[in-house]
Image 1 (cartoon, rainbow, N blue to C red):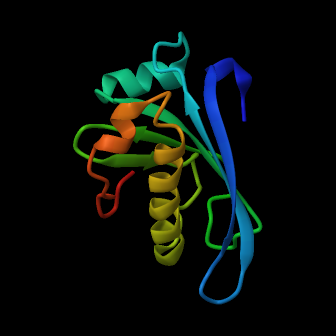
Image 2 (cartoon, rainbow, N blue to C red):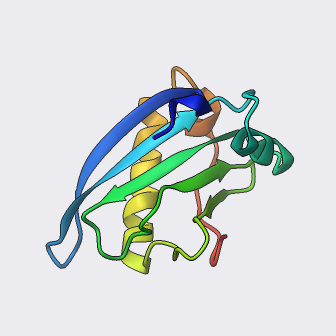
Length: 124
């Protein structure tokens, strides 16, 4: 994950999918006030916060780090060109871990833990 994005918090989680596949997800909360393209994109989306999510050893996961943007209305995840969104089961695991991540960083970003959480179907 890129420090030029002003990472404010990072967490890694080991996960096991229903089929027994084990892997890891790494979450980062980045500085929305930053002077970079991703922070500017998040502000244009009227985001409350944004960050990055990467995967390791999970076959239904995007190959590259994805961008997440949290708005008051929900969550948006944007993959790199040519990458797929996480598969259905992995999306549910990701959603559960976002809730954990937001709770763990609530001292830094209390608004994230307070907003209702749901993923829009087909979010890009």
